[in-house]
Amino acid sequence: MTKMSRKKLQGIIEREEPGARLIEGVPGPNAERLAAVDFDTPDLALLREKFLGSSDAAPLTDAVDDDDVAIVSVEKDSKRDPLDRASRPKAFVVSEKEGRVIGRQG
Image (cartoon, rainbow, N blue to C red):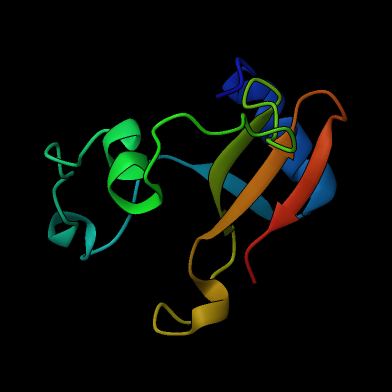
């Protein structure tokens, strides 16, 4: 995860998507209905051994540098209707290196 400050992220969001703001967490009535994290997921090496027959695999070469990007929730300042999908929060992928939004949901 990137080490960008909230202020810097908000500035990028405002520049790229006027009339939108950065939000924290999951808003709304569905926040308490989120599933708990599963801590009993098997280790990746064990899964490779089970399904591929070998626990040693080639390293991922096309992986994204996680220190450069942040995935944040963004919502419009002026919502039309809370039941309208367009007015619900969306996920944005922000690159610190490029200083811009490199991906977005919807």
